[in-house]
Image: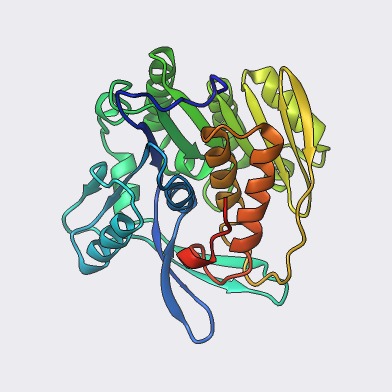
Length: 315
């Protein structure tokens, strides 16, 4: 097993913590209430794909003390997520968003999140030593959206905590997920590069990298990320083959035909889960990337970020 992925030990399971925000989702015709959030989506698909394997997937975020928050917590636990790192903020509520999809499955989002429980949580004095205790967790998964939720001073504290976690032997997995509505491109570039210098695995969408750096080929993203210090880089290119690179080599893994695209929500999040689950379970890079394409292809055939469990592809 690559050192970028922990091996299950006889002493206990691999502990993975996904850090970010989940919101209430409204979408569809007629309007339906669901939920979603990039790191939460990945955590749920990871938990499904690692079922029966010695791993525990934890979600770290904040919710309120309202009925909507209670409902979210219950649904996450039903999915097999460990929720002891979910803070509860009295008087706060989850954020929400409205999603519209066009005939091709592409989506547009409208957010109401500035006063969410997670926003208040990430703005406060988080106890990073407890949250990122390397004696309790093996891997931290976070995204560009996670970084954007922190105000600048607290983001700096997060970087220091990530560096300490990495020095203590923890592993860091990062997905770029850039949202221009959350922060400026120059702020995101600087923050992403700080994390890429510490990351063991990066899952980068070329469209997002183009928003940050201007039009360029996937190879340039690969070289930049490896040059910063990231150890395993995956560049997602939509329907085109993904590119995976380490110091040992480079692979181009084609996508698989999709019968119908209904909703591209969580396409990248589920791809990340498929790739990481495959690698954790001992798959080679091409095998893990092929699994990632299968999972993502299944997800975009359903509305919403989280598809029914019975619609998951076989490993």
